[in-house]
Amino acid sequence: MLARTGFISALAFGELNRLTYWVGLPALLVDRIGAATPAFGSVAGILAVMIGTTVVLVTISVLVGTIGGLPARSRVTFIHGTFRGNLAFVGLPVVVYSFAGSDAAGSVESAALIAFVPLVILYNVMGVVLLQLPGQSHPLTAIKRVLRGLAGNPILIASLIGIAIALTGWEFPVFIGRTLSAVGQMALPLALMGIGAGLYATRLRGQRRWAVTGALMKTAMAPLVGFLLALWIGLGTDEMRLALIFLACPTAAASYVLVQQMDGDSALAAGVIVLSHLFALPAMLVVLALSG
Image (cartoon, rainbow, N blue to C red; front, side, top):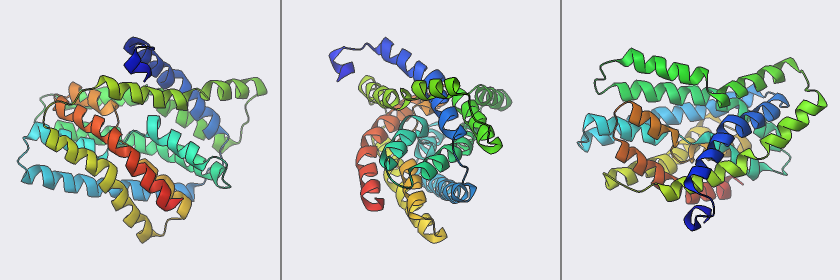
């Protein structure tokens, strides 16, 4: 509504997203992860479900795209959109708010924050490798660009700092801890507002049938496959709920930038992103209802 009425301009929303990405989320991650008690057993099970589901989704989307006759450039874009979730701007807020007030809130939040780090790395590396397949002429240049991006990613850096602090048991001086906590509190609501404004500003273009298919695979098939894998490995109820929230996340908006940089089908990428954000709402309601 803020974007639709012009109360906040598109330029202002862009600046708020930048503030959230470079300041709010890093402060939140350092503060929350640094104070966390690492539960690596829980994290291992969550990662097993997430990675296993990603492998299944990629396999199915390769078959669907190939049988459907998608050109190579569009096919890799379609595959990319089915597995790369928006964990930072959607997943973390939903996890934090859905477990708030419960006995498991602290441990589950810690597991979510620690699992977040390898997933960010995995999605970025897989995205680059995948989008290289249609015959890019300079694959090493693209890979180096993404590695530099990971090295300078404030969310990833903040997560690693938080993990180091949690493992060493070091405690922040009071003024630093309070500052990080206060600044970090702006991150989650601003992230959700930015997603809403982005949906308003983005228009569907290109192959809508494939955009719908990719969005449904991301928000419906992913949590279903994850649920079956979680049952198979015996994941606990809280850990399963966390993993399914992450899997029901819409396609990351950042994937559009990567698709553009690597000459993918940007219209298809935009369509998958927009529709997956719309489909993610009922998907997450189902996940929360079934696992609550």
